[in-house]
Image 1 (spheres, rainbow, N blue to C red):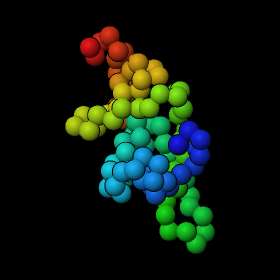
Image 2 (tube, helix red, strand yellow; image 1 turned 45 degrees about the horizontal axis):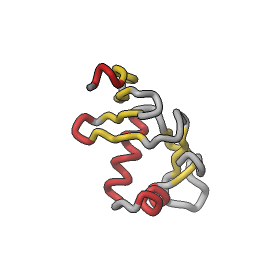
Image 3 (cartoon, rainbow, N blue to C red; image 1 turned 90 degrees about the horizontal axis):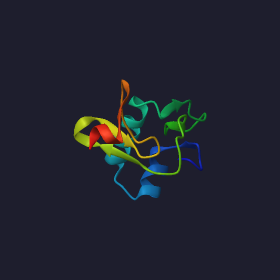
Image 4 (cartoon, helix red, strand yellow; image 1 turned 180 degrees about the vertical axis):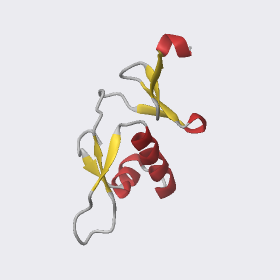
Length: 92
């Protein structure tokens, strides 16, 4: 995502070597947390395209499936759809 900036679900599937349903869940969580937005697809193309809008650094984000949140290792913060919540020390 950091290199391509604009990507599809298929791009995430291939890069991360995960199933389609999991790639969709990842993208949905990233959208809810404000890291990714959906952009208009190209004319004639059926697949949705997404753009990375919040690039906080090189470390991968950790998705917290059951919490519907993620942990941003670059910021040392847990992030939910409502925004940032706490730093690394508060979560330990």
